[in-house]
Image 1: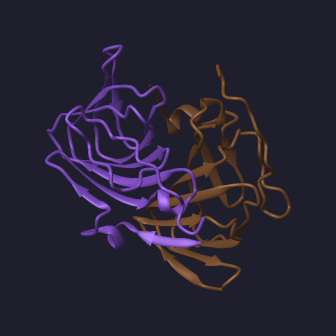
Image 2 (image 1 turned 90 degrees about the vertical axis):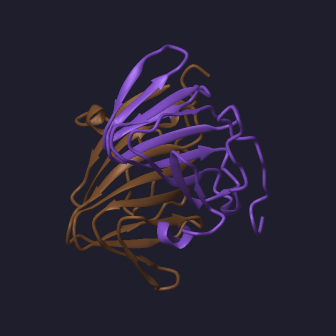
Length: 133
Length: 133
């Protein structure tokens, strides 16, 4: 059993800050469990375009409100605590938090922690052998 | 993109209630993304023993406080919002919420929704082809 908290990763390499968001990566590829788990904060009034060409992501909203727009369909969905959006088809999307949003994000394949969004808002695929495997 | 909320699964087959907890299963095996995502409520003052012989689980606490005890080591860890415990070794464990706990749970392999805990607190392994795959 591994027990860890968002505070444990603050200020480490697993705490990624950008202008619009901050992502604390708590469970990573090195844990070897087939997914990674992050807590992400999206700042109020921002607009971020994301596209994970190489990953599937599920986002569970725990605090805050805003919208997510599916770029392929143009559809906009409301986000509030308890909403989950699943990018099961590598969907390009735009997130617009009205208030600060906190969410729990799950990635498959798991993020190694070394990825940064490139100019297209894409995470490159980086693979890693599980530690101890 | 799939957008769904905990309210959408309330009262369905994906809303599992027991004496000590309630689990709303939002992303399941049929989505074919390699993990499942549940929101679980653990009731204040209860004591539950769990053992997932066939699954890895990550639990992200979003509300409430309590403890988790690793039965193998006897170690007890505090749980509060932002704590994550990862059952990376099929760890037998006991959860004791002091207040009502809400958490986001991730399972690999994904839960189909048909599992129930058996008398040992174990989920059997049930596999399912992804819908449309």
